[in-house]
Length: 394
Image (cartoon, rainbow, N blue to C red):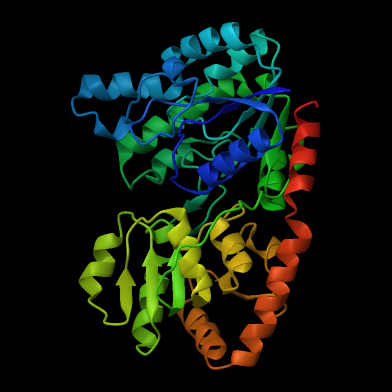
């Protein structure tokens, strides 16, 4: 099998590239020729195919109205990306393609090109981009399904993208175009890491969906200072940063370490809490080391997460997970058995759960042991690659 591995990004940036880069390494270790295809970016890992990558563009950086309109067109249907991929396929002739992140960068413009070359296409869906213009299914502090069935006007009315009219209109138009074209007809199979996302796709009329939980990447742990609580993720409202701040204020004796960057980084800085240390975005080895050095990992998300690596890697590292009962997280954590679930958007519940676990070493040890056993039982890499090979047609 010669495999095209396509994503807008070829550098660490979140859960989508965590899976992408682990998959790339795993296929090569199993003797499969991998052909990466991504946007050209200075942070990309080196790839033999990078000469064929389309140029990088950042829609948010457009200034004038004309530039914004050009960015909207390119973010909806990137003709340069389609031409670049066509050239790569003519030169390399892969038998299958596994897609990860496409929207607003590579865009679904590459899908008809893959179909024209007779390449089997599987697309792993990392969030709700195919059913929601923002990809989050989140508005006004809680989960939202108002756009299901193509009712994208709700995203405009709700100012769902950055709380602003123009970005919200842009993503609503983008999704309306994709729905009109019917981009799903160019995909042979959609892969949903969680049943929550699989159900959302099916409810929106998307067919040929299979459920395959995320691969747990192998990797080393970098030494990090011990702490009581770790938060690792993007610093945004939907990730539960305000609940994290409430936790740190309520438990001043608990050492809270935060890894990640985002628009609410300033909120952490301005809080000036002696027990909270923010380390920013750090290499994955350091984040794994931080989880291994922590007693607890908190994932207080408000939005319906898919299958967050913040949970999976914490379980593998031996940190007990306290997470929101939302989206695909309950598929990963059995409440009271191998972790603790709390209601999303409920700081008091989060504080109570963390306080109880920090004061009970025996309970923490029992939960951590069962979580590690679950990861070892369910996340065998050979099984994941065997399943993906079947999805890709052998």
